[in-house]
Length: 137
Image 1 (tube, rainbow, N blue to C red):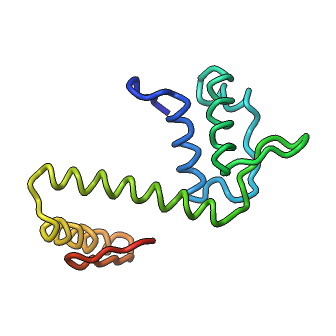
Image 2: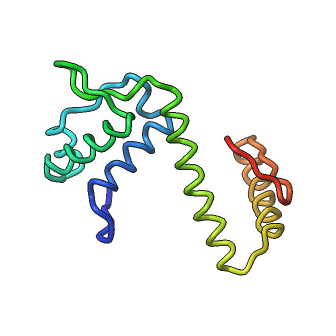
């Protein structure tokens, strides 16, 4: 992982772990490596790892098990809420970028649908957005 200088490393680590949980690479109930192991893996100070994990625990995504270390919550409501927030943030960034390029909502929707059609041939997945339509996952 390459860290960005303009954002605190612990926040970037939190985002990385949230992304792994959202994508299912860290399943509910999965045990995380020790702080020391994570620090070596990410080549950061153990205190930085501890801060990231503490913040995630405060947010309800991680739980400390007595003598078992930190595990991912099994609370599907918490995980689904986090995934929805992450998706909304990325969508807002995308829409803002398209708007700054001068695209209208309709043009953005059309471009989105064209991109999805192009992907469909590669992945077999289709998602269609209609002009003015708002959807949640």
